[in-house]
Each structure stands twice: as C-alpha cells, then as structure tokens.
Length: 239
Image 1: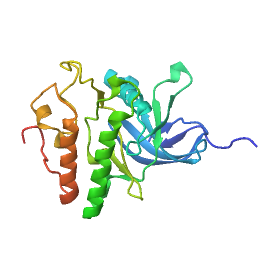
Image 2 (image 1 turned 135 degrees about the vertical axis):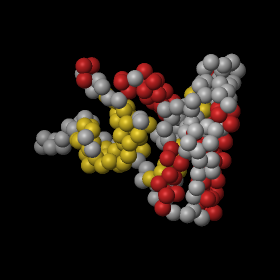
Image 3 (image 1 turned 90 degrees about the horizontal axis):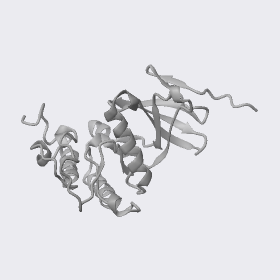
Image 4 (image 1 turned 90 degrees about the vertical axis):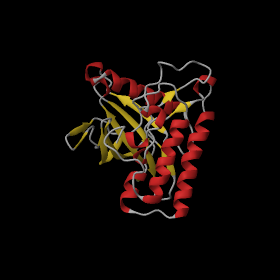
C-alpha cells in the first residue's frame, strides 16, 4: 500500500518540507532562530520536536546552526536535549533551510512560571537537574579539547520540561567549546546570554570568561523559580 502521508506541511505561513517520515505537525513556538513544531516520527515511532532554521540568510546564523549541531552530536546526557537528526533538501538549489530533530518535551520553565507557583520540592528537583546537566556535560566528549562547554544562553525558555518533571537543557546555538589550556582572548565574544541572565563580567565587556557565567545564569533562574519574577529586569545593561 502506497504511503499517503504528505511530503510537506504549512504552519503559520512556514512550509515544513519534512517528507512522509513525519506527520501530525503542530506549532510550538518561534524566535530569531526559526520555528519549532511537534510531529510524530514514524521512523522512531515517537513524538519529536522539529526546529526549522533559515541559516543561509546570514553568516552568523550559519555559524550558530553548525555549532549547535556539532555540540549536540557529541553530548549524551539525560539532562541535555538529544539530537535525533538534522537534514536539509537533497537538491543543492533548494537548500535554503535546515531541520533539526530533537526529543519532544511538553513545555519549558518560562511557560510554567507564567502559570504556576513552584513548590520547594519542584525547585530543588529542577535545580538539581540543571546543575547535573551542566556538570556532567563536561565529561561526555571523546577528546580533551571538547571538555569545557560554555552554554552562554541559559534562561527559563531554554530549560525544557515534560509532565514527569524531567528536565533537559536546550538551544546550544550560542555555546562555545573553550580549551582552558589556550588563550581565549579574541575567541569569546561579550554579546552573549539574554540580558536578564547575563553575568557581570560579560556586562563589563570582558572577552575572557569561564563556565562561571553559566552558574550566574543558574542563580538568576533559581531566584526566578522562587519569586516568579525576573531577578534583574532591565531595558539595557545599565538599567
């Protein structure tokens, strides 16, 4: 019997040319990176999330997409979102977008904090999983140069959750792999991390920093989980 599933879907004006492998696409959200939808993967026989990115419009988008795929391919930890697949059009002339297929999670911490006050037990469990993911990711790479990963954009919307309260860190588009034995001057940029979660050394335009910037972001997230308010809101780096 021939496969009757469509080759493409249109959601909110965006065409997802994902082939018959995926069905039941539903809109999740979007941002500067592109659009994310949920879908049923008939190859894996489970729900997945598909991120559509248009990286070839700007060199920066290309770099972010390549960096995210490269890092996620080598990470394997239950508190970090797994990369299932990445593909684009088979024809070079049609290669305008990249699709990244990841594990499906029902919501994120940002959405949860908008509608619910967390209990102390939930806060402790979420914090434990965030720190566990940040710590153990350093030991999942095969070679030494890839042992110091800076996420550089930790915030509630990049903390994914499911109905069992399992947590996974996502969005490694701004992540960098830093070798502590090398001089990082000129390699690390100061314009990283969403402003409300940005560490002081980055605010002061320092280009030399460590994974401590991620721990600062975690502290901001912890305070937000307790208060349901952003700890350091502001329109720019001064106010």
